Image (cartoon, rainbow, N blue to C red; front, side):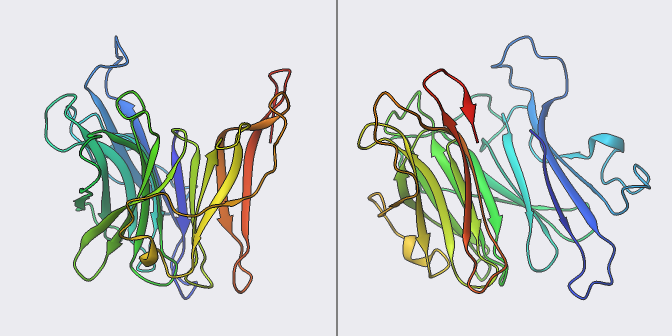
Length: 276
């Protein structure tokens, strides 16, 4: 699914810029395992003037990943310097089906050049870590990212955390955040404080519930971590035959001081229907 981030100048005088990223095949695939999947990025400054302000080549923008890298599951945010931050996973080299890991690309403001930064150091017993969630800090150049061990290879469902260090221009981590199902996690940062939160699923006691893990130190206290971090329950589903939390989560902080964490999730009912 495409991801979008929008921003304007810090003083309110610059034009709004809308950033887009998505994963796609540049040809019609014959099999889901075809290697030609890539991550695209583009942006424009005036929704009524598109595509003359598009970035890259026409409507397709530019490729961040190579056709043999199996890039995907991209998402985008903008840091305090108005530079787009795109998170995604890919194989490290142009070798189809090589073990994959999270990456991030940084785009200077209105410049077609970009810098790739790989994350590394995750549990080598699980060489495939996929589907990252990225968010930029609201008061510094720090970037936060989480990603999940691929369940077909690593059935322990580990969720990892990295923190981009703007001094060394490299990623610190990873830290082991929690055990959770694939794709069932969200990441949020508070613009009014140093709080960072990860929201996850958990079925430690039977029915699946929603939990959050919060740092008051901008994620620095999550590194290093070799064990799951303490988590706080948001929901209280207790009936094994009753409703429970289902896949898909969303989380954000509001603009109060300090920000309050808001969470949405799917709830699966006994009849198979889902409610938000």
